[in-house]
Image (cartoon, rainbow, N blue to C red; front, side, top):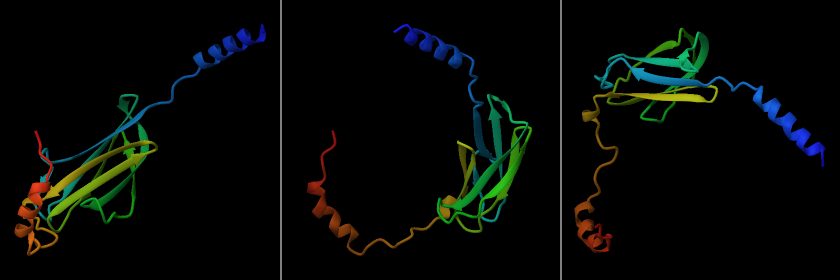
Length: 144
């Protein structure tokens, strides 16, 4: 029984001597504050990498662009210097350009809207759309 307190004391000392792993955080943003662009315009994305709250001196991030969250492009590996890396992208039609960036377990996302008010519905409204509403309305739950 005297062995148990000694083991607990040794475990406490060994845990006390360990330093926590550095924490990497990523932040991604666009060069337009509102992140809105016109079709064909280039968007510049800035990736900020902080390690324990300070700019990461050197490192790498993996970036993937996609249109409207689908159709991912091939990954691009960027070098981070003094806590920053930049990447440009554009869309030639209305939609949203999404950037996902990762480094180890850290990740960040940013998006750029390209003339979003010009987006069209992907499918036409069904012919019976207006007629089906009154039939279903009584079965809708009441909200209070």
